[in-house]
Amino acid sequence: MLLISIAAVLPALLLLLFVYRQDSIPEPRNIVVKGLIFGGLATFASTLISTPFFNLGLFVNEPETVGEAIKTAFFGAAIPEECAKLFMLWLLLRHNPYFDEKYDGIVYAASVGLGFAAFENLLYVISAGAGWFSVAVSRAFLAIPGHFAFAVMMGYYYSLYHFYGSDAPTGTKTKVLLVPILLHGTYDSICFISDLNAAWSGVLTLVLLYFCIRMFKATRAKIISEAEKNREENEFWRNSAPDDEEPDDQ
Image 1 (cartoon, one colour):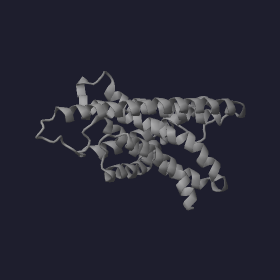
Image 2: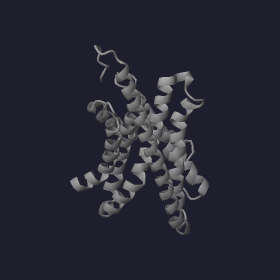
Image 3: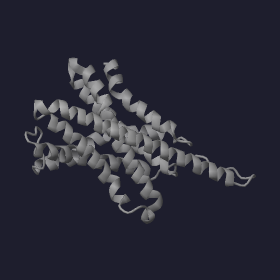
Image 4: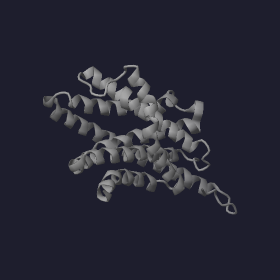
């Protein structure tokens, strides 16, 4: 059981470590760990949204058509899960005095998103029984990076709106939730549609892999770019501080 648990959660923790180590002034570890816990709780919170959607007939548990697959991807997964993650991110940051740099939003959103991914992955891997290893490997290369990308984009737009408000680019406030939902819904739509027809499965698996690679590359570039901007800003303020005055540290 220990080996299965490690295989399930390690990919998420490694991605979070990558994000965390890019921060020039690292966030308090206890708050980052708290974000992981909040992400795990988001798996339960999401059912408070998905259950009413299901009762309203907005999606089915076992889609049989392309239309049903897309509705299930969005109303059964993307919308409830990203809403729950955003709520948990808001809880984490609303009274957080260390949220004082734009890159911090990416760190905290990644902690919540990857906490969600780790807990969800653990459930999938354990339920796979004897086939746990193949499930762990496939999800390590697809589902975990997917949740990682959704979270980083949420954190990027969350920070942008938090620090710039009405001066942020048009649509920033909407993109905090809309972009993760669209990415998540597209990912799950491809997954669900591939299960409908064996002839489509191979092709759509390649499409899904390509989609995840593109998402991961774009996400990695965004992280590196924002981290570099963060370092440059910190260096600027250090150089601008009077000789007898130390710049504020977290």
